[in-house]
Length: 100
Image (cartoon, rainbow, N blue to C red; front, side):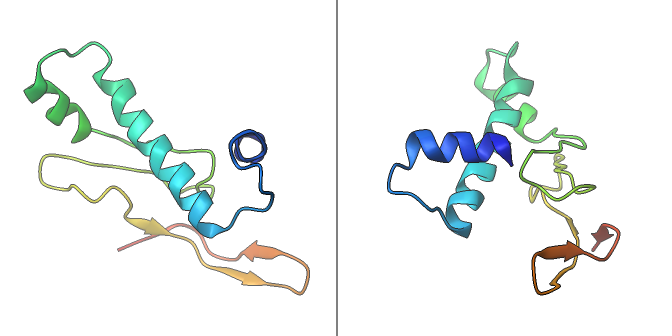
């Protein structure tokens, strides 16, 4: 969360961000994770393959225990969720990661 807050202070000078800002930040990190796997691959076809081979990638703004995973047949990277509830002061996770 500290990484996101530092980024928001630098690039979002109007102040408070919202859930869309967090979603965009996390999506960009996912693209960055894919780019990191492509670092040594120079052929376009290999870039596509690298994007389809994310395995157990965890990003800082994702809930603990949830990861990204892609393959040649599975292109939607998020397949887990965790349920949270508001306890009057803050949001609290009350389940283990659920896959579906």
